[in-house]
Image 1 (cartoon, rainbow, N blue to C red):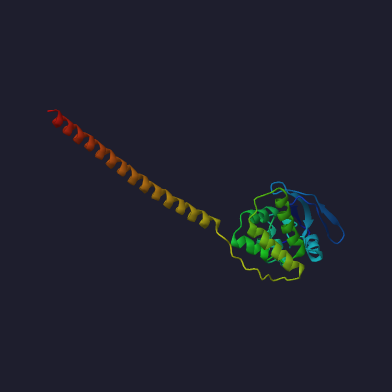
Image 2 (image 1 turned 60 degrees about the vertical axis):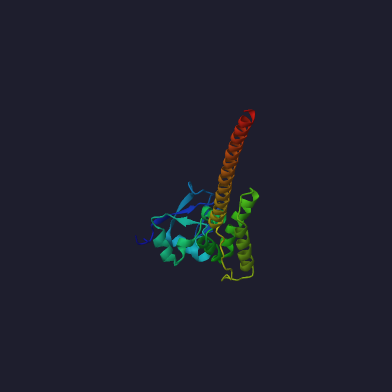
Length: 215
């Protein structure tokens, strides 16, 4: 759907914090929202374009558009990587359940405001003692240091550990131990049965010898 002059488009805030933006003759205050209940306000495309020219609200993922209009609006705003712009829940998921692709999206962030969101979410997770992989902390701290030193293109190389592989390896080792113990128990049972049989035979032989002696 082509962008229409004068038409209004819904703009949403999915984050808990308020977001304030200014267009040519008007300012907008977006109250905090959530993934399931974002706060939304209608804006004309002219206002959206002015807000985009004056700041990073759309580039940094502070505000988003309706799914029906987003592709056309981002195209008009010339924001080419809009599919990689992360909402708070996306960032939280990458931190807690890392993948190489997810880490790369965080490493590719080159905007202070945008990365402040990432660091703020990490800090929030730490404050509630969430189980955060060490590698997530290391990568975010390293990228934060790069951004503070004005390094737009990161030199961080991702070497993602595979928890699943580690678990499978440990399970395989446990299975091997169990199989070894099972074989040892089977061997012990066989030895025990052999010993019982020998004892019975020895008792039987003793009885025969005793019977002959009595005669």
